[in-house]
Length: 205
Image (cartoon, rainbow, N blue to C red; front, side):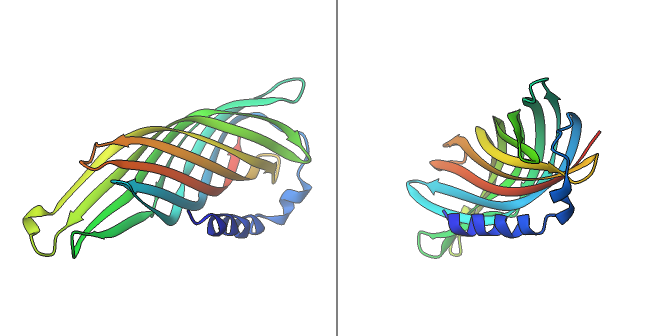
């Protein structure tokens, strides 16, 4: 896994976050929210026992609702959908090529946390359903070419920090780990894990 590249890229995205977020109020506002998300996507694939890692770009959106208790504890629910450019190809059986591409990813879960400094420090976790497409291209026997996809259930956990930019807008940084259960759905013994570092910019109603 390209961990150093992942976190270096996230750090670069964080630097680009508007400086006015530093002046945000320390009081967290609950309620409904929507956000756009963009980040680094590091997918670790194990195909028939051989592991490889590929880094791409993740992009999408999330919607949720947060409730703030009198003590300042925050708990909320969310759902999101994203796409990715992440793709891994490898040579097999001579000059043949097998590729696996990360497709759309759907998430739903809960997050909880509290106010730290001028923002919300939180943990999150829940259900994930990801689309993975496998293709096989034979340079010698085109009849063996195929393309197939499968939806894989899994789970995700993560943590992040969110600050207000204005009374109705916010910015966040977040790390998310995802594990998928694939088995032999594509005719191959595939295990998939995903590490993401993202930034989000949202609007709270």
